[in-house]
Length: 108
Image (cartoon, rainbow, N blue to C red; front, side, top):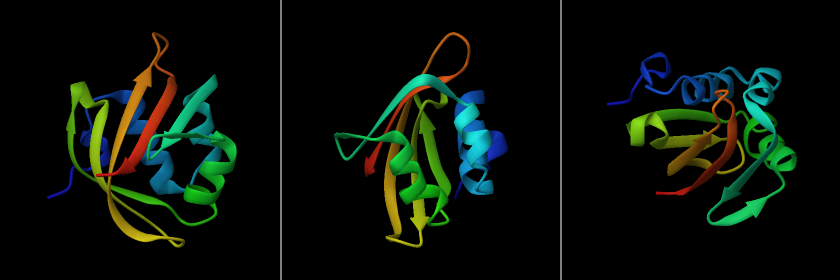
């Protein structure tokens, strides 16, 4: 059973999932700190290039299966037009202002 995005515990993570699923790049970028970083399967990636390729130009979508660490760690089914669907893990670092400074994803 999936968790509806509106029911996710952490406000920044909730907004992140909502922006991904709405394909709203502007809203997504507004959630990130100016110096935000990310990694995919343990390798740091160029954030702008990665989000365009993996999310916004390929219709990325997250269905969250469960959350932990106060809502800052997710296990989700992620799908996009490039790779199909896979079970993934996501973790988030959020600053005191509620902006995401880093997210890490990879296959679960």
